[in-house]
Length: 450
Image 1 (cartoon, rainbow, N blue to C red):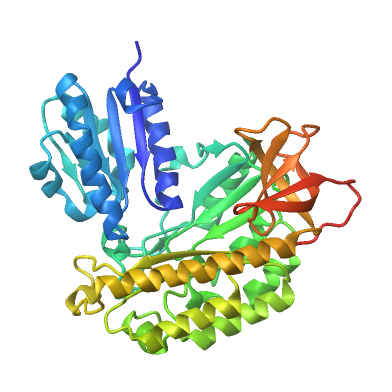
Image 2 (image 1 turned 180 degrees about the vertical axis):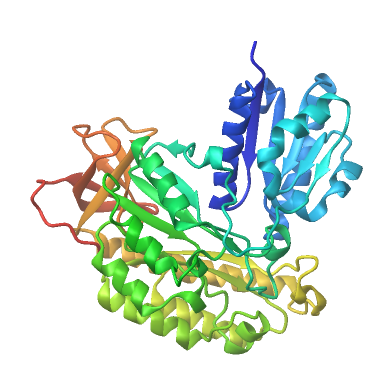
């Protein structure tokens, strides 16, 4: 009987992408997919340490796995990802059930690391790949054309690491300094994924629009080239940084049908004083100006963001500017978090002086404001026609298919006379929760986002 592997993923799309790569590596070793930890002979926790709570969840999960390990001493438990990179051997010292720890740069070394486990060792590999050059094909050559297509979607990592050193962020310490892949290497992977059925490709990077290859080849040129690939319906990317977003990218998004009218652009705080303490290298007005231009050339664009409440010294007046930004931009989605110090960052040396109760109250206010805005925007969508990429069957209601509008709004569509991967015009008839509902209309009807 083949051994089975279960991978539990925490955090961002980059971690999801890494887990897909791990799955391929493990398949080559003869592992099959395990639907649950209980049936696995190998459990991998692919971890995230951007926020404090996800890290706590990892240790809590390891505690819950002790019973499985006691019942099956041959079970291998591995911890990978950013918590592994950050904590390293401390994980092995704290949790005797863990057999292997490895950082993000070492996922393709799983075969040799698992061999070491088989010899009775407890390896910890958190070394970095060489970063002497800013242009580096960090995907091994034999894996470039072995990407993973999940339904209609596929990910491509175009950069790795980050050079911004925002004062609150641990990513440069868990993912390393930034490198970019050669464009030909990326486009070859894209062509392979399209041949394998990808209809939508996501470009990934900690700061995706800081991509830079030789001879002035930047993110604009890469996005332009990818948007001309035959067989591809949609391109998305995450996450860009405001300082590297410009009007030329907005114009390209507006002019190319395949580039989705969706942008996740973190602004983190509304106060310029707090943004300076965060080392964000942009002001709120600079951020808003870029979005005002984008909305003028791409009406209906969906804009989402990240923000932090309760950063050290944040006053009521500082927080009020954050709420004002929410009201102006009217984001389609906001990922809001209470500030928590991350070890080794510059902000961790600041006094965490905003009381927990104040952080919680501010977070609740952000959620309340955003929920109202989202409800108003969903109601405004009623009667509009959206172009929807069908990506699955509704899990509970017969006769419904699920998909995403160009601006990333999720939508359930009545009817089964189309298949997964179809791009269809849909008239919005209402919404339920955060999901739009609609019905397919005639193919020649012009689509527009709202």
